[in-house]
Image 1 (cartoon, rainbow, N blue to C red):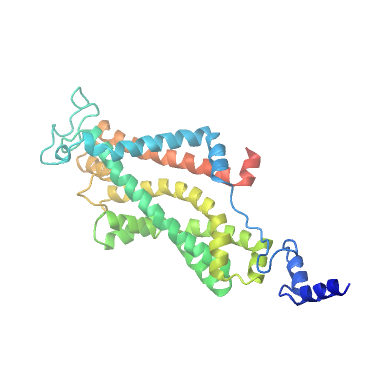
Image 2: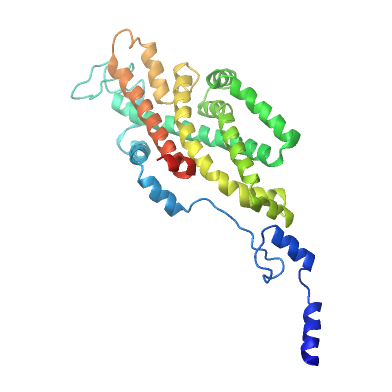
Length: 331
């Protein structure tokens, strides 16, 4: 009896959470009180695993069709230097006559310089896709930073950030991008910056709404009560729940970025030394292809822009349905 009493007293002297601390831990939804000190069983929800997302996405026929087309387009664009010579894309050493109709030598005819429209369209995918992806990366990055910051901190910082976002939302994106591109040095980088810094407000709004939803969940309060700082909460709890939404938003933004690049290039605000779908349409306008009914100069780049934008939209909508439980219930 004496030995057991001494053991009890020794056990009471051991460091560990107090009764009040254990009560607070249980009230906050912690795990078993027998857990080691400092190892609270905080739930750490994460989005669906990659395997589940891939399995659900494979059931989306439209999304799979769009993804297959994008993969094929990317492969053709990446391997273009293997079967297209830069010499054939030169305005001086063009292999054909200007505005030549489709024939056996040139399946889709030639442009205003005499270059094959097949070669121009394939090569133009390299610049158009690059600009679209880089501009989307910039826009989603800015939007995510603004949205997470505004949603997590709230107060006057969140109010100021959202008012700035609203100001950008009110003004047309194309007008802002055109004004910005016109005052900067012409080039691919200028087009990327012009599109990226004017296309982020929608992402910011979506990410902020998701951040507010995550902040209202109980495990965020537990993390804060156990000493988790702002960086810990944002990195471990908010970002993992926001990333899937950002991915879906990015695929939807790429299509708009590609259309914006084509529009800026068509207006003469792109890089005239680079071959893209937008510069090809601009050249068609300059040589009078519209009035002369030279459809073979207009159709290939225009169809490519529409097809790629549609493919990105299909992939984005499919991802949105897979990652959004409410949309899954309506499927």
